[in-house]
Length: 176
Image 1: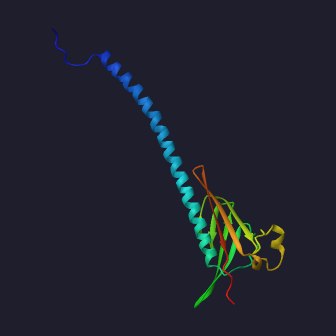
Image 2 (image 1 turned 90 degrees about the horizontal axis):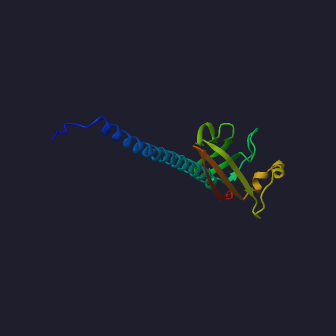
Image 3 (image 1 turned 90 degrees about the vertical axis):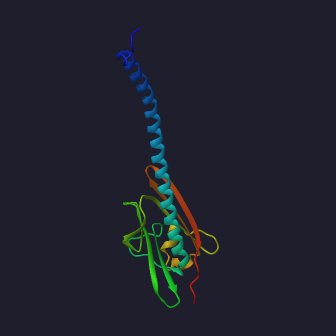
């Protein structure tokens, strides 16, 4: 009887083939699991950014005592200019504007942004009677005084995944 001191070349080749088949199957599974993780991370990041931006704008609207006319070059569907007045504190004007070319939602200045990857920023203005203001209404002088409620909708896209957040806020009437 002969002693078996090692493995033969045939045994080594069979083991290598079996390992290759097993690793090929595992590679496909790992590749799809990695793609699912990247997709999930993009979805979570988009949802978080959209929710933060909408919450921030809604907080600004909650503090606003009135709307102000927008600076030249900005339209009401892409920007909000709010007046904040608090007892014992100087009045503050807050500008929130969307730059669609860069996909950035700015607050006050172009150095402070609320969110990037913003694909859509929609501001809907409503009168006290519930009527939505249309584009022609913005041409009238003093249109901001007619607004009683504002709805803001923001879409953020990260990693091919889009999340939408929306919030409606009634404006607090200015104290007289």
